[in-house]
Length: 224
Ligand code: B12
View 1 (spheres, rainbow, N blue to C red):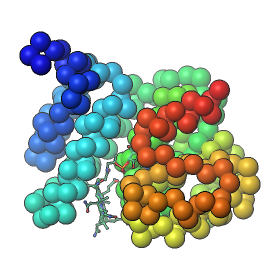
View 2: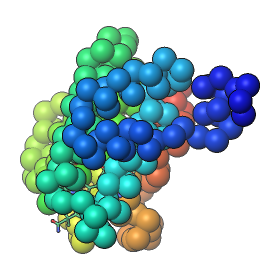
View 3: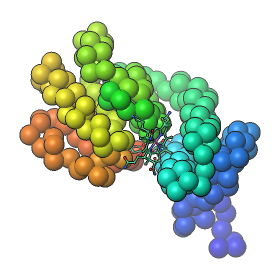
């Protein structure tokens, strides 16, 4: 191990997200930003940064919160810092990818406030040359349908983190299908670990992907 450079270490054992998590929990934005830059110097693929550092840190934040080791305020601070880093990275690294031939709407279902994973998915579309309309958290189904009629997207991607929002997703998917019979729908989010995808087995042209890499493979097939 001693003779490995940072990239080789990363490939061999995964990135160490703990320093980032510590900085996040202490509300040290500057440190989080610096660790982000250091990671990208060794591994320029932002998807790996998102999966290995941001997602793992936020999952750890969730567990600490669940076991009352940190406050709700600290959890809010952590998610606010990650969101601001995602926005900064977007404008620095992703905003100038061209050409943008296809359009996707990415949205959370009604009452779903977890939007960070969805923002990462939005960025993966952008990296692959799509124009992503990120509606974010808590979108009422009627608004989504109305917006889709305006912009006529090539795909709609919907996120579900909390399993008690599943009925909202089911009704959203049915409304999309009734209004857009041929439009592919992507679904994802950690609720699927609990609820599975059975609720959608009778729906055509719907796909579930668990993470950024599998979603990117789908997008690349779609692009060809
Ligand atoms: C930050 C956070 C919040 C923030 C969200 C802020 C924001 N701007 O997004 C706030 C404060 C709003 C919040 C609220 C709540 N939260 Co919360 N939250 C979290 C936390 C700590 C991080 C979420 C996150 O960003 N994760 C990182 C992202 C990158 O991961 P991800 O969402 O899984 O996304 C990845 C994949 O799932 C996938 N993906 C995601 N979306 C999509 C979409 C598509 C189309 C595809 C293909 C893939 C895909 O790609 C991403 C990259 O791999 C999690 C802990 C955790 N395990 O995640 C708890 C967690 C999700 N929350 C939880 C709970 C209970 C709640 C509340 C009910 C708390 C309460 N009592 O009020 C409320 C519910 C609010 C609501 N109605 O939505 C629980 C859920 C438990 C469960 N079994 O359902 C968790 C797991 C915490 C815990 N350990 O108990 N929360």
